[in-house]
Image (cartoon, rainbow, N blue to C red):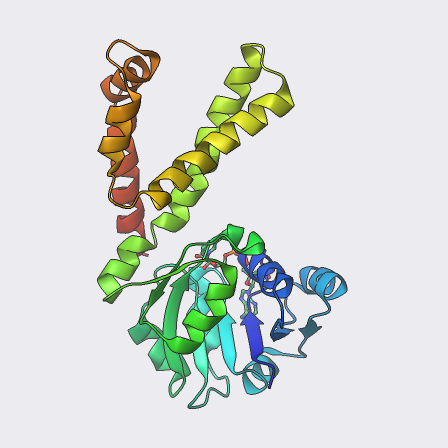
Length: 255
Ligand SMILES: NC(=O)c1ccc[n+]([C@@H]2O[C@H](COP(=O)([O-])OP(=O)(O)OC[C@H]3O[C@@H](n4cnc5c(N)ncnc54)[C@H](OP(=O)(O)O)[C@@H]3O)[C@@H](O)[C@H]2O)c1
């Protein structure tokens, strides 16, 4: 039987999830909440997914419901809906705890997940808590799933949702610099993006090598890698990444 997946909160992330789920064989039967009708219509036109009359219908007609509103809207959106046992609520709203979700969606099974927008192309690292076979099986269609052992580590892992966006900021600094230095736009784009993909690919292919090992092999004494890294360090650019992670975690804990 085809899996029925409902989505409450049809915004940017939900659109990426729908795109990713519809790109694989045997896609689930997807039912969208009607708010944000324009986006739901566009998804329906593109992927043939259906839109429900209201959030109650989304819950009553789905085996798995993804709650993808903004964090402050999530509990309100999930309240007074016909949740039932043997149904899974997966909340992707950052910082909303399992305990809070249980108060509105019991007796459904509660899972938190943190996919990112590259779910659209099946490349999202999705953190999950608690580990749940149904949620794992769904998100595996969108990229690798990483289950966390407790909610506090899941919260810390959720910072990767922000880190993923910062990578674009790094690209946004480097690409125009190359162009200003005379590299044609398409070449600059390919070089910067393939460098990121290649670095990630190397570390995934060599699980025993640490980032420090990789850098050590690349940074010849007095060479350009060493020189640039020294400047980044001296200006606090590397430590600032750690600080940005910490500030993001604190934001999640205090929202
Ligand atoms: N964007 C990402 O890449 C990303 C990555 C990881 C996690 N997340 C998480 O995913 C969640 C959604 O992010 P987003 O960027 O997709 O936000 P978004 O574009 O603002 O989408 C949220 C959607 O939820 C709708 N909504 C609010 N209350 C609702 C209700 N009661 N019933 C049905 N729909 C309702 C909103 O409608 P209105 O506009 O009318 O309020 C909006 O269309 C956030 O909690 C975020 O933490 C996002």
